Amino acid sequence: MVTGDESWVHHCDPENRRQTMEYCHKGLPVPKKLKTQAPAGKVKFTVFWNSEGVVLTDLLEKGVRVN
Image 1 (cartoon, rainbow, N blue to C red):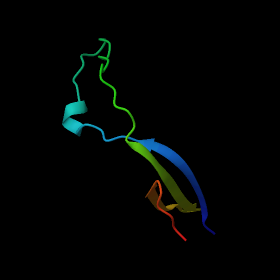
Image 2: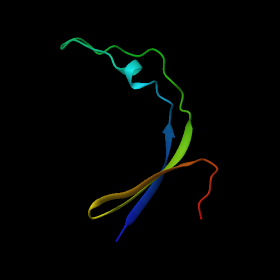
Image 3: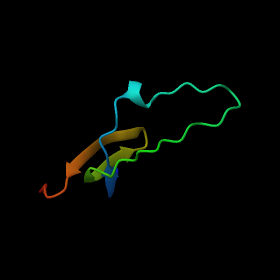
Image 4: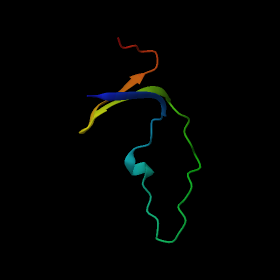
């Protein structure tokens, strides 16, 4: 038996991993990012799973239909 669920989620185009990494000394506050990005859009996230775990995940752009 396979179960599924779907939900609309916001996504953004993040900076690359190296740009987002910062080294902080232990005990010091984490620096705040001043620039925030607006979401790039919405996608429909669908996941199907069974008793053994996740079987399939899929992202569907807004305006695209699947029959």
